[in-house]
Structures are given as C-alpha cells and as structure tokens.
Length: 161
Image 1 (spheres, rainbow, N blue to C red):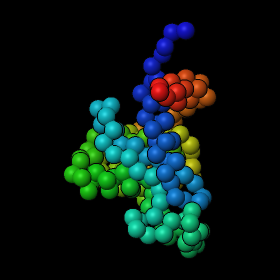
Image 2: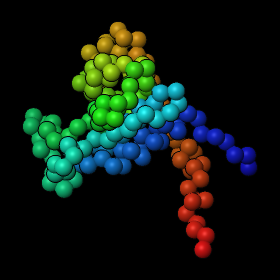
Image 3: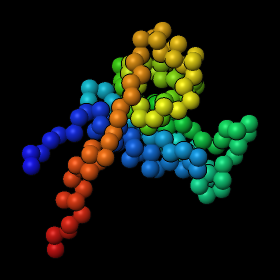
C-alpha cells in the first residue's frame, strides 16, 4: 500500500482536535491552532484562567447560561501570541467550532485572514457580516475516519527493549 501524506487542512485540524482534549470545560471541548506559512505559531483550548479552579473539578460558574470562568480557545491562542511576542497578522485559524461573535471580532482585530472550522456552532449573523466586510474566509474542514485511521499511531506504540 502506498503511503499518502495527510493534507494540510486535516493536519492542522487534527492538531486543533488534539488541543481540545486539554479543555477543562464540561459543556464543550474546543481547540484552536494559529498557523502562518504552514507553521503553528500558537494553540489554545477553552478553560479557566491559569491558577483558578476548573469546571471539570468544580462545575461551571453559569450566569445567564454562560460560563463566567471559561476563556475561549481562540482567545487563549491569541493571548499566547501576545505573551510570547508572536505577531498574529496574516495568520490562519484552525478551530474545532465556528468562533462566537466576541472571538470573531477579536480575531479580525488580530489580523487573522482565514478561519477554518470543523463544527458549525451558533453562527452569529453579525459575525458573518463582519467576516464578509473584512474579506475573511470561513471554511469548513472535514476530518473523516480514514484521516484518523491512516495516522501511524501503531508504529509509536511498540517499544523496543
């Protein structure tokens, strides 16, 4: 069988899915990967402020149906760039879920030029309008079982003694 390389979109989306596995949110695990020139510059997942309690340990802190404790994955990725001095201008975002309105506004201000998502989640009409106005593409990326099954995980599980 001929070995095939995974396409770039699936490669980065699978990374976003893996990052989402670190989420501390009970309600939805979200992962985000910021990419420029086919290189990861930052990633983030949704969860509490560093040092605070986590929803998976203490339960969600809900007000009007929104968790007050959670920082969204997209924001954590942008903040990682800010903390370590990495520009986000002209970067692309791979994210497991369509960004909310607040994250969309933040991403636009940060200079993100393309948003690629896995799951469609509560799209805001105003967010769509802003994306159109700024000419930022919102594209769905599919990851199927073949993409996952073709990963060489088995080769890493056997340990030479």
